[in-house]
Length: 251
Image 1: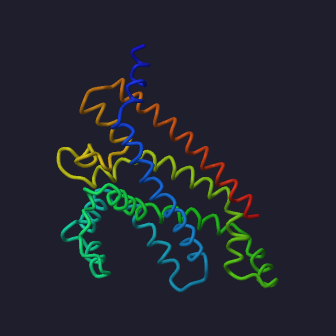
Image 2: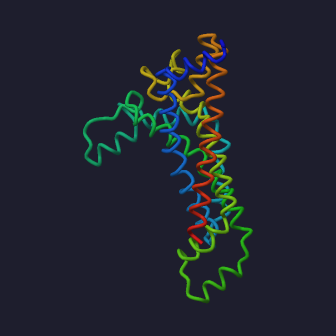
Image 3: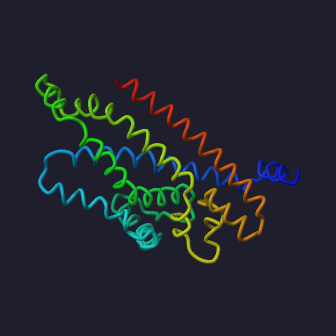
């Protein structure tokens, strides 16, 4: 009964649902653009362009870069007073500087940009490897029939990448819903695990860590872990069905 009470308390815990909302907000802001950019980048690198070996190696650099270093750089880029992003927005006509840490949606966008920069190249390499396995004679036949490059991409490349796309969607979903390191390092100070002064970018995994180590609620943290597992399974299932549906429709 004590174990079940943890789930009852969790259901009524506003901080937990705030963390859930933050997690899914950053997940959608990062994962969808990330996979679309990766697909377009892989398609560009799959063509015969000058220096493509150099570019293929370059997109792997963010993967091996230290997460702490990435967080420091992006914290400076999205600094309220001296950040390059606010400076660029000022040149475009926006006079008021955005507080990228205090504002909830802005903090989601900043963290999502950090995640995208780090993992877009990784997914692009996966797509590129899959594209390399597609027989070239299929494209040659399509070109002889008058199909444009864009039509070949949507009618040949994307359908044949269906298993790879499903794989990257599932992996990105699992990683996105377990987001921890980027938002943790994005904040600063002793209360970093809280995800900002009002928990505006605290994720479920950060709340789990806070409940376990800061508050010593190990049973409650276990309940959060099981809820997170359930959310991951359900979201992966939904994304899998949506991806299959889109690919089937595109054929």
